[in-house]
Length: 181
Image 1 (cartoon, rainbow, N blue to C red):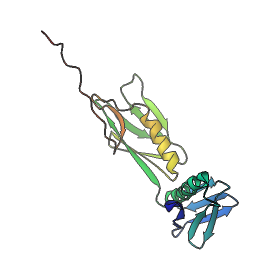
Image 2 (tube, rainbow, N blue to C red):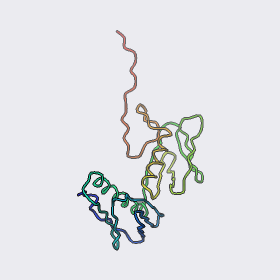
Image 3 (cartoon, rainbow, N blue to C red):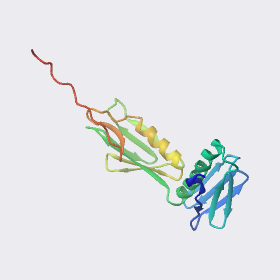
Image 4 (tube, rainbow, N blue to C red):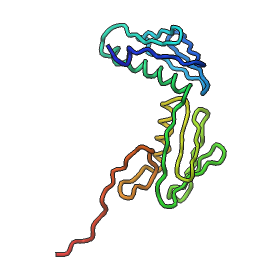
């Protein structure tokens, strides 16, 4: 049996969980998240614990068991603590600034790159080179951070570009001069 799928999810104080067929809604201080769970999985809410069970040991059901439990757990964590990704901007003249709900980035292009904040994604800027993306939905936070990073991915020679704070850029050696014989 799946070790992850077997573990019960504890629901903290202030979090409301509603189950309607195979749709689960989790409501907390950071917002409300709704997700459809695969119909083969059985979700049970008892008191302050949520358990996910599977009908049999077929390969697809084993895979869905751990996945369903993890998705529900991510929803509970998202509405209580939230998720965040930290991006760093490296490069001479590269900088970011936030005005209202707009993130303006100068990334060495002939024009500034502008990214809008959405309803469930919040952008904060620390200094001139640190972007903090936060929100309750782990998937949306990761996707938004990937889209911002895509505006100028880090290059391996000088390390210029937008990178995750915990990302390590493998550096390459530049060209050497022409060899004389």
